[in-house]
Amino acid sequence: MMQNRKEIAEPLSSEYLDAIIEHSFDGIYITDGQANTIKVNRSYLTISGLKKSEVLGYNMRELVRNKTISASGTLMALAQKRPITIQQEFKTGKRALITSTPITNVQDEVILVITNVRDITELYRLKEEAAQFHQKERKLRKELEHIQRDSLKRCCLTAEDQKTMEIISLSKRVAPLDTTVILLGETGVGKEVFAKYIYQNSSRNDKPFIKVNCGAIPANLVESELFGYEKGAFTGADRNGKMGLFEVADTGTIFLDEVGELPLDMQVKLLRVLQEQEFERIGGRKPVKADVRVLAATNRNLEEMVRQKAFREDLYYRLMIFPIHIPPLRERPADIIPLASLFLSQLNKKYNFKKYFSLISITMMKDYNWPGNIRELRNIVERAAIISSGDEITPDALSLYPAGERPKAAPCVPAHTGSLKSAIEALELEYINHAYETFGNVRDAAASLGMTPSTFVRKRQRFSAQVKDLM
Image (cartoon, rainbow, N blue to C red):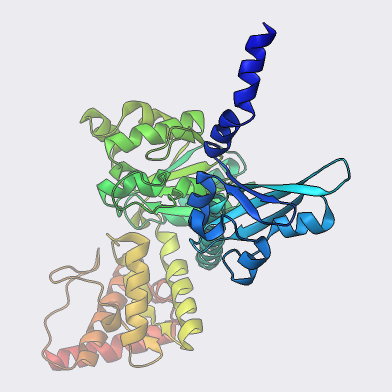
């Protein structure tokens, strides 16, 4: 038995030991007590990019002086007679963490210095990529915060109609809860404004508010935009991967506008977010937690889409936990003039205008059907403010009625071949006469148009005479 142990032990001291050193994943560099290089392994040559002939037999001081290596842990270990750990950079561009350990004899003289060299180039690369990623993330969050602040400043709820007041009350009750809310209504009724109102009155109002127009994202990009992807997930992907908007909205609120436009396969992932509060990035296997409140909106009939198999039934019922229907502007007429006045006030402040609506313009806006709802109202007010030549915004600047369409419940005005001014006066006479026919007396008719009785009578007489002359 002793014989066999001796046979094994002897090769370990030479041949086996050399094999262990040579096959070490880390680089190994050995010098004698005078810093002369006596052994390097294959890993060291790979990490450093040096050849064995460039270092073997050379003194470490000479290698440092010739800048073959950037610094020497061996020389520090010899000087201090203790293990030294430093970072080293090689001409290959690689970086390494080296630990030089002095070996002493019984007289406490250093006879060997063994240096372990670990390649940390990849760690540095990952650290730099992480730093760049966090820098991009901070920049993105700052941009989103700026957009969010700017957007929320423009979020103004102006309401005088009883229907709108009821919607505001309903929105305020659900706002503090984390319940999913879906806003239903025609295009332009103000769904985004109510979504922002819910967010502002929620417990997450100091966290991100991310708006996503589901109908504006190409179908092949929806998943990567909403849920992100891992690095190398597909050809052309960012090598660092990408955060999805659900991650950007973490701890905050995400508003999915036009949610009815989501492809069916994305509806499945959205359902998972709503039910399990998690999702997976493209190319990822680890679930990402989603601490996000979801608000949604659509102008489509989701119930009909479910019947047509164009929208998932399970997602439909999950979204319909708390639906809020916003009626069109024509069904809440008391909001028309307050909203128009708000938009004009904003334009006056922005452009240093002093514009105001004429009485006949106010009446026309009240009578108009507003098929485009609040969005159309805002656009028409802005256009009228720009093209009106004076401070008073007259009906010709509003351009409310398409060809052949007139104000409701009012008689048609005969065609005129005179000036625009005479045509407007004829239109104003139309409203004056219509008001008189409606109320049957001057006082109430004048009050309905915001005039004094004397002005009402004077204009009626003057415009009647002028229109007769023109006909």
